[in-house]
Image 1 (cartoon, rainbow, N blue to C red):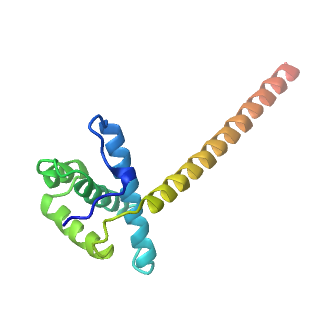
Image 2 (cartoon, helix red, strand yellow):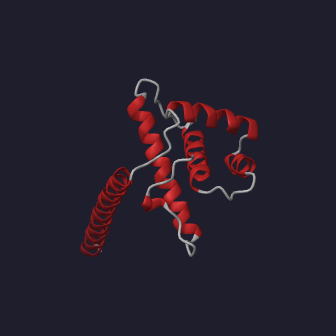
Length: 149
C-alpha cells in the first residue's frame, strides 16, 4: 500500500489550489533537506542546477500528494523547460537520493513550517531595517540639501 502524507498534508474537499501548492512546496523542501542530510558530499546547488532541483522536488511532491494530476510529467516538463524524458531521469535520480522515502511525519512537517516562518520573519525584519535605514538616509540628504540651499 502507498504511504499516506501526514495529516497536515491531507487535502479536504474544499481545499484550494493555493493550499495544495503550499503543501506541495513545503513537502518538496523536506525532500531537498533530506538529500542535503543524506548526501552532503554530493549536494552542491548552483545557479545552473537550482531550477532542476526545485522542479524535480515539486514534481515528486505533487505526484505523492495528488494522484489526480493528468500527465503531470508533461505539464511539469513544459513549465520547467526540460523534456519529459529529462524530467523522468531527474525524478529517478532524485527518488534514489531520498531512498524513496516520501513519507513525512506531522512532527517533521510542522518543524519545517516553523523553520520557514522563522526565516520569513527574519527576512521581514531585515527588509524593514533596510527600509528604515534608506528612509533615514533620504531624510538626511533632504535636510543637507535644504541647509546648503
